[in-house]
Amino acid sequence: MFGYIMPFKAELKVREWNLYRSYYCGLCKELKREYGLFARFLLNYDMVLLAMTADDLACAQPPVCGERCIAGPFTKRPVCGSSAGLRLAADSLILTSYYKIVDDVNDEHFAKKLRARFLLLFFKGMKKKAAARMPQADKLFAEQTLAQQSLERRNSTSLDEASDPTAQMTGELFSYCGAQTEILRRLGMFIGKILYYLDAAEDYEKDFQSGAYNVFLQNHLSKDETVEQTQMLCRMCAGEVALCYNLLNLSVYKPILDNILFLGLPQSIAFAGKKRPHHDRHDSL
Image (cartoon, rainbow, N blue to C red; front, side, top):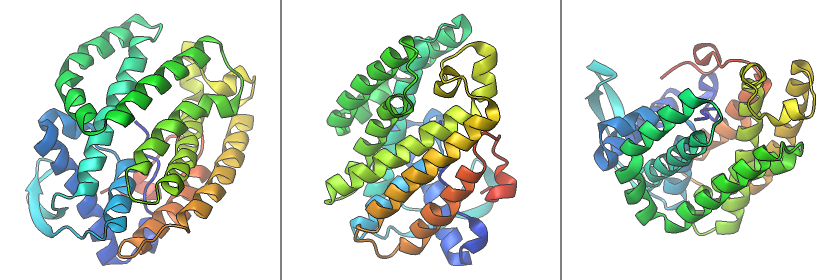
């Protein structure tokens, strides 16, 4: 999965960083509560933004307490209690992971296809539960996964078309965050486009070697041209994200969300096409 949307730790206050970290750890705990131990391995940073946005718009402030976990059994870490935002993020992670695996089943490489079929056995029950909670999202994800497969089979050269399925799926998830549905959907769509472009740029060499579809390769761009194009497209999309974000009625988590979108996301865009050294850019959790 992606994992590009993170805060810029150096500009956060200590209590803000601890609160963000409590949501990250809280999402891990929520995945275990709702979907079992295996689901914790799906954890990524992107869904923390979804959880905090949903809880902020609902004026929810779940309690935070110190807990030990499998990643740090000897030291207590701040962990956010269960909330509607964390449940939304957990359900969303299951659906996005499931349909990523469905897409991998259609991969032309036998080993990847076999691994994906094996993983689907583990996901069957989890996906059924998440789909029951988010039926409209499940329907849209299925449709957009087919759309992605279709454009890849056609070797589409359109950057906008290639990013649209991811944009539609991310937009759908953000529409669950609150009453400002269309603003949230548009916000999520442009975040989705950024995620797609960054991921395609990072996978450039791997896709070149394997022969897998990559929209930048389809346009015969060099790696340097791909990075330049990615940064330009992402900055344009980030401008649209900012316009939508500034229309939201945010309050308690706004300083953290400001940091993620106006400082952390530009950092990820600046590192387009490179492997992400999280310890240097954002500091690991």
